[in-house]
Length: 340
Image 1 (spheres, rainbow, N blue to C red):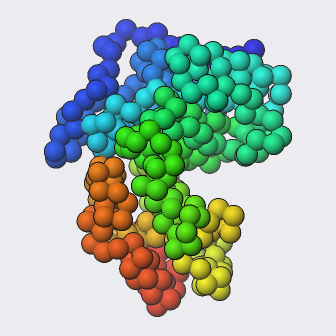
Image 2 (image 1 turned 120 degrees about the vertical axis):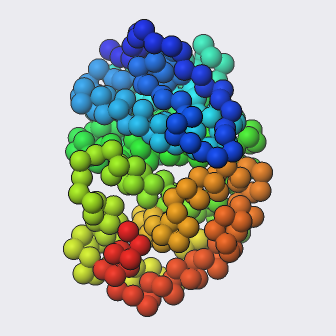
């Protein structure tokens, strides 16, 4: 049995096509409410019958938080392109997941979205199969395919905190992708930072995944009853030592001898994500979190290299050199205490 969440509420329809003010102000921003968005089918959640209710509730909660955190920090077109969002949720039952495929295909056909996305995403040869691996992903490009497609798996029965951070991470990707107007996914990849490797066309995660990882930690900390050191401890744990006495990944990074922007998904995706997140923490300590959003408001027009230099003061390759020199000159405990 497929559960398509559709909540009817007596509230004024939210205005999605809003004008972005030159100076961002929370007082002027729209408040996004998940019940209204689901009612208007701007957010569609297709949950398999065996998905535990706690994960469905958490998905709704953290999508709403993410939208209110990030949507209006983008461009005017980014606000318009934040929707529609389709979320498929599966647990472990293959038959229940098959019903989700039917529901997804109906949404695609009814709305004339890209038809190639109407397929079974829960088979063994599918990359990062949510039914088996219990992972999350954004698996479409809104400007090309017509909608943001989030796949969520709960097969690992993750703790709610971990699961909530995964939803935030994927929703930051929605924010990133919504800022681009080109209808070509390949062109967008070239503009987004994924193709910043010095090794030709190799795709690299340091920027897109590093920002999504670190910014999602910060958002989770703002909206959860966690201790003040939460973000610092998350980064420390993902570098290999929650006690901050050592940093095995930092040591391995220098032993590997590859620049941050050259570490691809096939080389060591986890290192790309986590060292990227540490780099973003270092960057935010220098320029502030708001400058990340300013970067994304300009990247569609300026492209990656020029936007990075304009908002952060130097070329990304020079910033990475500076970051490496800082890590070599300080122990990890001082690094994490200095920048967070």
